[in-house]
Length: 531
Image 1: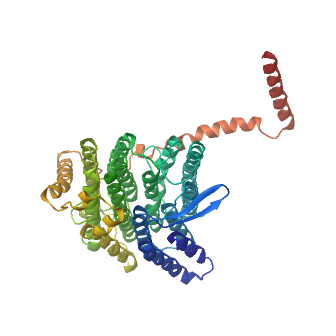
Image 2: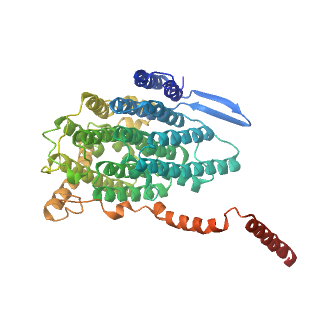
Image 3: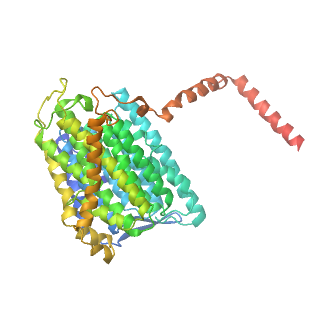
């Protein structure tokens, strides 16, 4: 049975169930998908004919299985986390969103990939949309329009590829790459087309932002893995996107906005590995992505707990929560350790593997990104837990067990690949040279600690020497205006101006339409005579 179809059925089944049973239907469908995925046989597929196309609705291999397990596990954690706040709509749309994501992961042809890529957009749009709140409604429409542009670009790439090659099998596209790059760039929030990400995730209820953080951007990177050949553009484009993400995160003040820019940074990091011609590096990048899904979901849950407990998420309004929220603080430390790729975490193992296939240039680039990432987490940890508490920071209520228990589940998952990586290696069919690596030799341990030490020194120097403003540590620090700059919204006034002028001519007056038609025909007639 296809795990994505199980989740889709679970979501549609919630329509027929009473409110008190909707959660359990979603939970059971998620658990069933999680149990089924590891039992799938690599190489298995479902094929059928549609019109003149031979389609593969389902194709199983190691990367798809690993991605499917991690996405489903994170979705189950997010489902448990959302139970306190979720309404009936959530239990319909969240399984549809998760199920369509799994359909993309296990797709074997471009048509199936595209159809469920779009179903992801539609289900997540209605998950975001709240017609009662004008701000959230506008945010949802903005999200939808951006991803519709990406969807049409993907369709254009598929059509050009089919016209050139005559097949729709899922493989790196041989034509239509510019359209494909735009589609994938929007989905993964590449710098320049990233504006929907911080605008959306920071404006929806915290339990929805947790669920959104699992799928959309990660499927974009998965699309890069499946559909793009290695190229230097991916290396340097990913590096620039990651470093700009670091700068924006350091200048931001809102907790979930910082996490959004951190997503951009980490996906840029993975994109660097996807640009390498080495299969080992690409597989290591995909493994790193799966670890990123877990710890980023955990961090969005932590931000939700902080919002629940204090009613605030701006760093200049937080502080001194270490004594009041010790469990949350420890979970933040462990998630930050995974983000930094410290030993015993799955990120540590995947970083070693992906760097085995890199040349010296990208290696230095990755180190710079790691240092920037750790600086961001030092800023957040200090501002939330260690900084002297502000007068307006009020600890309103203690987070219930239903919010804290999912943290414990995901924290344990962070360390499983780091302690027992062999099952993952077997699924990925890694080369013997990688399997024989001694992952805890002094060289690897020291290389993982270097970025932490450099970032720690930079943070201390910035704090005491005078760069506190750049780190966002100054009292009263506010979100900088240029972080809100959005070229797509800025251009709106020009569209409105053109529309206003055009409406003067296009007003339904029959005499004007006849005048237009006459002049067009006259122009065509004169053009023909001229020839």
